[in-house]
Length: 349
Image 1 (tube, rainbow, N blue to C red):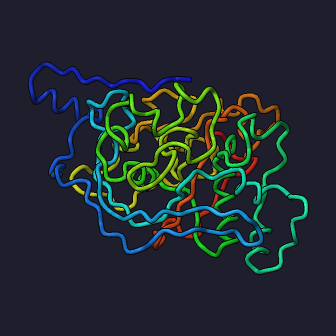
Image 2: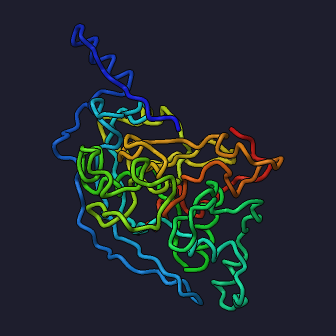
């Protein structure tokens, strides 16, 4: 797998020229920002809870994440840094809940599979959930040998993840969706400013993550590694996690550096690519698992899909990507009633 490229800054000429070069290539500090005061974490007024899916034995835990302001992205000197992580820019995030674990097959199977003995929908919520479009049957083993019970769902498209969230919202009566990149990084960092939520030393990564050095080429059951400071498991590694945003390499260049952007999101369109995935996976080197590391989906993730047009539900060559859900305390206006616009006729870009 392609490794994250390094982005060394070796300016050794006049200070003004160096400052200008850093600005152009995403390495400049945010002017006017008192970096020592960030992150600024608000006091949480909401509490975590356990969501039990009615009519089943399946449940999952949601962790309360406070709102606050932080510097999104990575500093120019961070080892393993990629240019798409800069410039660092201040971002304000509203409070929300996020899944303590990645979504597992136990949860996802309730959405897309007709399980033996499953009862017909009775309640209005169950009927609404039953009306949500479901994935077409895959032509191969959808787990790709990674295991099912207790394991993270993988090989699913951005569209499939967003439709699952729509199903879950209908079934529970709550608003569930994918996290924005800003929400995801805020939750991953958990108040830290280091490369990882536990510090800067990748030698400690094995305690917190499944990645190329310890995963033995498979994803693992969720929650087996240590959590981050806010109690979230597998934010580093296991499977990379879909975010709500379209992915653009130069997205951060569009944000102001002298004031915080409130709840930024690059809204999805009807095109198939590219969408953001964060956190790195079982197949990745340490650099891809850093809190600021970004990745965009690619057409190669469907390379072996023989269908024409190719599936909008399953990714034959992305057994390293899954997702977790968030629930906003108060949804921002531009995300209300948001749903995937992707169809089989959607162009690649």
